Image (cartoon, rainbow, N blue to C red; front, top):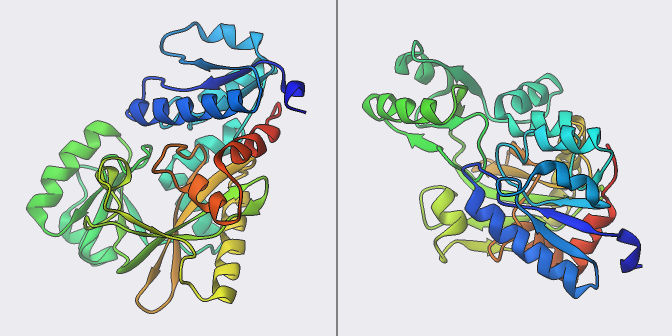
Length: 302
């Protein structure tokens, strides 16, 4: 079975802000594929001519951030008729853009926190009148919580907006949800057990995700069983309406009143030692190598 995949390229690294994490993910995937007897090679598009990718039968995308999750590499692979893991070009592009994602969800009555697109002309008072205080500010097109800050006063907003708008010209603010953070992984149209995330930081930022070792990941999540099943089904629907397929992750929060809100979709989740999809798979007896194989099986020309 494992010989039927041909030569597999694991796309990793790249030149986005998430390069370091992508290299860790890719390295773990390459080692898993090799343990399975699959002919796999690391392929860093920032160090090799991307045209060489057509020499491979399949591609496992372990790129994160721009260039990896925004649809550009997916469109290129389609043009070369190379099978790849993850969502297609259009849904990757939508999933990477938090503003487009939330606009689509809102139009389909999928629960997501209130939000605004902001520019240098948007006043702090207008934001507070619209979505309240405190609130989050986010670059629309970054992952790994890069550039996200919790805003508590006007001066902080002005300072952070300058910084965030340098990361991405498209900036949104999002209503603060006072509650717990969760994620649900999706592999081949099936949901994995929900994970509750308890960071020691104020929220689940880049440092809590990749650097600190005191973030708690709780699985089973502690959500009442029937409610977890319902939320997981809604998460799968939130994933599908963006056109997403193959595998990914949907992050959500539950507030103090028990209402859940979907925050964002990740179409190329991490596969590092800290990563959530492997953790959820392990809960139902799927080890890392088996998980990588299941994801690789979903590769096709989209």
